[in-house]
Each structure stands twice: as structure tokens, then as C-alpha cells.
Length: 231
Picture 1 (cartoon, rainbow, N blue to C red):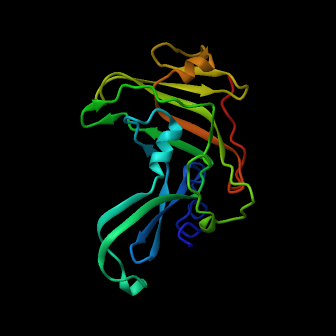
Picture 2 (picture 1 turned 180 degrees about the vertical axis):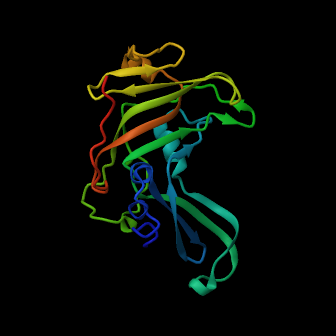
């Protein structure tokens, strides 16, 4: 498939720094009962994942996000494109086509019933090869034998409150020296630096958004090294 290959719509064509850092690409793969497989390219800036029971960790949330959905009804298989031309059930799965330099994982805390008050486990590193399907044939650029996509956590946004219409946001950020600091406009006033915290404090937080920087991997795009903040 070529749905996730480079093209005019890709980050390189826009020249936008934000796109070149945050944008990745997914491939939506549909498989008809007749065996016809079709692909559609989808750019993304973040992955918005469900965290309801039984999901307890970021890894579980991503596995659920990339899981195959089966027996989706009322799909018309395109006969002009070699399909059967019938209404049928299909299987649908999202595949990771292009990994972003910075991966943003949005935990869906807010639903129709209000905020989900829970702690979702996350670590200092995230390996996308664990539970994420890579569509290697659709990835632009060289692909090595290793399929490891390891990311390092460098920022965590936390919502403090009980509803989306109220509350307070704080952010934990890892510095270039490896220490963690909390940015909280209720407690930090210039020129004092943000308060240093331990990794235990960060890991115990009820995260809303997680920011990971790609450490290494065969499908990482060539990109200038991103500098973490200096305090």
C-alpha cells in the first residue's frame, strides 16, 4: 500500500515546524468479506485514547486504540476498485504508518457522564512496538530490521478538578539535566524557577496529556535534536 507514503500533503511540503515535529500518519485498513483490502491515509497530531474500565495503563489504551474492529456492518465494497460491489461487513484497523518526532497521547478523561477520576499508569519510556501494528510497507524512507519505536516522556499535563468546565491545569516537565519540575501558575512566580519534584510525584499524577520524544528507531524522520528546557 502507498497510503502513508510521502506526498504533497505531508509535513515536509508544508514547511511548518509544528507539523514536522508533531504530525504522524495512520493508515486505516478495511478488509471486506470478499477479501478486498483498502487503505486510507490519516494524518494525526495526537492519539486520543479511551481510558474506561478495564484500561489501566497507557500501553493498554494504545493496544485498544489499534485493535482490529470486526464485523462493522453496512459497508459498500467498491466494485470499480476491484471489490465485490455488495453491502457487507468489514474489519477495520488503524496501522501506524509514520511515527511523529513528538508523540502526544491524549487520555479521554471527559465523557458524557463527566470526568473519569482515575490514575492511568504510565512510564518514563514508551515502546510503540508493544501492541501497535506498524504498516511497514507503507512507511516512507528506509526501514531497518528492527521495529523498535522507543519514546521518552518529557512532559505531563494534569487537570485538577471534577469537570471540563472548571479546574486547574499544571504541567510536569523534564529538563535537559533529567530532573522533573512542576509548572503551576498558582505557585510559581518569576523569576523563581519551577519547583523540582521527583519521578514518583510525576508517575503518581492523574495525567491528561502525555508528551513523548522519539529516542531512536528505523522510521524516525531526520530532524534537528529537540532541546529540552534549561533551568
